[in-house]
Image 1: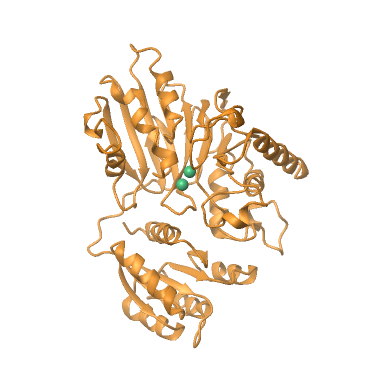
Image 2: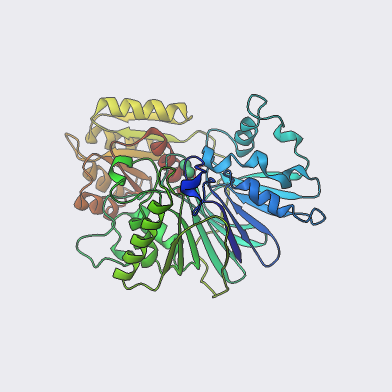
Length: 440
Ligand SMILES: [Zn+2]
Ligand SMILES: [Zn+2]
């Protein structure tokens, strides 16, 4: 496959003399298979230039699959300027994660309403199809494409395209799931030593890829002030990718406030981190323009079930919230009710366990530190009972120490979220927990 970066910037375009080397356009990456099919990861402002390049020979019809990670501005704003959409001989399939408040078609159409743009989405002459995707392995554009949820304050998918004997992963935007990456009682650098199940799952998604293109917006020094904004540090990405046996790593989604010298320094520090780990992985900061060849190496396909659409449920998912902190509990209930779920609540562990048994909800959101019965004891009791053992449990806690995170996962927690969290982060994680349990 051949890869070219058309946009490497995160959040908002940042053109100008300070960003001329690494580029100022927002996220857009082209991956071209030997068949000629073009995969486009995101359509930030870089998509305009990609579209022009694809139309350089107007007699050649374009066949493309656009894989949107999510629909934040910096990932969709170039779409109305993507020239192949304006020619009837072209075929473009557009994909994005399902589970947002609107369908992909609706979101893209709203961006092109007359207040914002002169051409309506329905007026585009190319053959356009819209697909809302879930996790799992899909057949797209003649390739196997594995999609997996990332950690971001919006429902966001990473994509792993396996074609021509090579594997390319695109993971923007994404933030570490856990606090520390490694368990203290195990040697760092191995997948089994990763503390949070979410981070391990993410590493397995990257495993053995020939090229990983990853969000690395921040330095470790910047990150504490930007926690919950949904982006990674280069250090986290390097450690995870090296442990996962990635061959080449492209750091991207550069912060708009980082000039070329700053990004070059990130590249230097990332390379030093790779050397310290004695890893053979090649790492670089993505820049707009150069062509990258990703040769067949026979990368093993990622283990992923074929994506099957969950059957339409007879009722909206029911969620039980167990937390003694009443303000937070009521906020969670209100937010999830407005997403269409049916909520019940308990203010202590004992009542929570009773309701879990009585109601058998589709998901339990469980605080750890509570009077009467702590969250971990509720979890253990749920797992020991046949009627509640399979119910997904999302733990939320203000005290994410290593021992409690490990205990949570050891006792069968589905996911683990640290307070304070942003509302969109909660809704994205709830969505992922339910989807993994086969709920639409
Ligand atoms: Zn972004
Ligand atoms: Zn985003």
